[in-house]
Image (cartoon, rainbow, N blue to C red; front, side):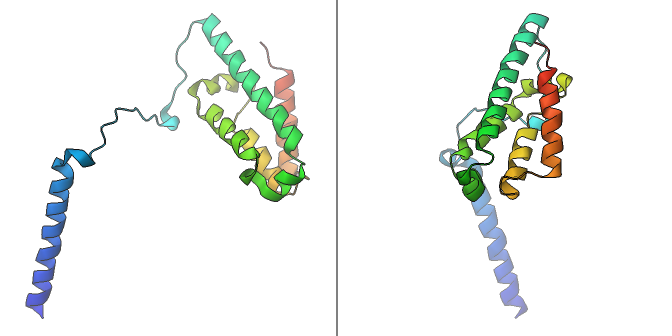
Length: 152
């Protein structure tokens, strides 16, 4: 029995060695893309001159505000309440995530605007069937205050 287990062990090790060797040296299996993947947690706001920084910040704010207005249009809709992000709002969520993942969106933090709060509020509305919760009401109150006080 020990000999059988030893042979099985050797076969397993040999298989792993051969598979690793083939994977390492077989160029067909190695992806040839040179695409750079950015880790959002390590992303920093690029250093811009003041005019460029202001222009970019205003563009991001404009998109943020547009997405916020869209949220207020659909948050109590029947489709959103029943289908959530499986319906038309799937694209909205993708846009929010793209904006949130944009390193330059950190420029809005100076004005107490956190892009990710849009999806948090939407999830609260979805879970509460369009009624909202205490936390969504608090988040929206702070968001409206930040939007009103935004300096362009």
